[in-house]
Amino acid sequence: MSKTISLLGLQWGDEGKGKVVDHLAKDLDAAIRYQGGHNAGHTLIVDGKKIVFHLLPSAICHEDIHCYIGRGVVVSLDALFEEIEEAQELIGNIEDRLTISLACSLIQPYHIKLDQLRESSNKSTKIGTTGRGIGTAYEDRVGRRSVRVIDLFNEDNLKSKLEEALDFYNSIFKHSFGSEEIDLNELFDKNLQQGEKLKPYVGNVIQEVRDLQDKGKKILFEGAQGALLDVSLGTYPYVTSSNSSVSGIASGVGISPTDISYSLGIAKAYATRVGEGPFPTELFDETGAYLAEKGGEVGATTGRPRRCGWLDTVLLSNVVRLNGIDGLCITKIDVLDGLDSIKICTDYKSNLNRDEMIETMLIEDVIPVYTELEGWEEPTEGIQNFDELNQKAKDFIQNIEEICNVPVIMISTGPKREDTIIREYPL
Ligand code: GDP
Ligand code: IMO
Ligand code: MG
Image (tube, rainbow, N blue to C red; front, side):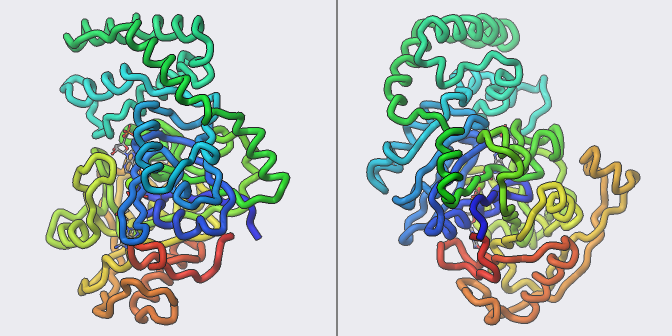
């Protein structure tokens, strides 16, 4: 029986992580976010109602679970309080079961402003960010000048950190963008007030997680974004600014890498991407439009349309290996229902050899090579038993297992919690 499980998206995000967390949550004691921020959008359908979590772990919906926001997450207090309020309307008070690390770096209004100014300017490389100040907040974290949660409780520290930050940011706003400056006193007061409001939630996540581990509790590390958006291992520079791979868990929570007993990888039966960046199997034809329409492929955070394409097992098999994936969950197989044929990318034609491609992730110019499988007419939607899947859908799953050399232990057949096939339970 696994005690600590990592749940990770293996593509460019939006693989259906929220739905899978919600399915597993009944058997968990704790869930922890370890990277990213409110750029994430994790959708759950609970009692027919759609709920989207951005910063809170999706498992917060289940009232016996304690949720944590680990030190690797960048926290916007505006976004956090808004989300807590929304969650409390649905699920009641969560004060006693949400803990935020004192070591989290805060996203300040200047981070959001600079992110948005950069993205709307022609001068810099446009990434197509969510405009939430994620990358700019991580720049300060790596630059060792973040305002962290603990700084909210030391007025002198807070003032001098904000003063230094605004010296820098206001000069950029004024000189590089001709934009308005941010007022120090207003920002300082707001931080102090938010610090007071945050007090019931702050805690020592490392110790609390150790206590859970010592008691043999079941803990889930909930990934945001996906392995191909990892700042180090993804399609750089078209990535997010955190380690969204399994490697981000140890530093983003404060555990040893050997503390993860099972790694569950989530991949869609096809592929999507929001924002800029290479996408070798992207479809610009009616099949792409069909996937977008049937899959409801619209960003859960920004409402942007998601680009759609075929499943890419060149990338998938690489991230399975990189992340030590023990089992896969293939989501949204129902979206493929009714297609005459289904393609899986199994190779690239490229000037780069495979090793160089994996090292650099420069996949702009590769030409995908496809294996074509027969589609199926029979609906897979809502099926809960593997035996009830039609043979062609089973063949599709078997192909993925063989190419990626990993078992497909779960298949998601619809957005609802119960629309799930379990072949091997990871908990
Ligand atoms: P996340 O960011 O990985 O949690 O994924 P998102 O919530 O951003 O996007 C996944 C979308 O697909 C959401 O609208 C889900 O409700 C929906 N979804 C999840 N699993 C399935 C599935 O198996 N079939 C269908 N049709 N929709 C699904
Ligand atoms: P979930 O957790 C899909 C993408 C953005 C952009 C790039 C950088 O719902 O899967 P950022 O704002 O992070 O600096 O933007 O990363 N991106 C996501 N794409 N799902 C997400 O989260 C994403 N979070 C960030 O679209 O291309
Ligand atoms: Mg999402």
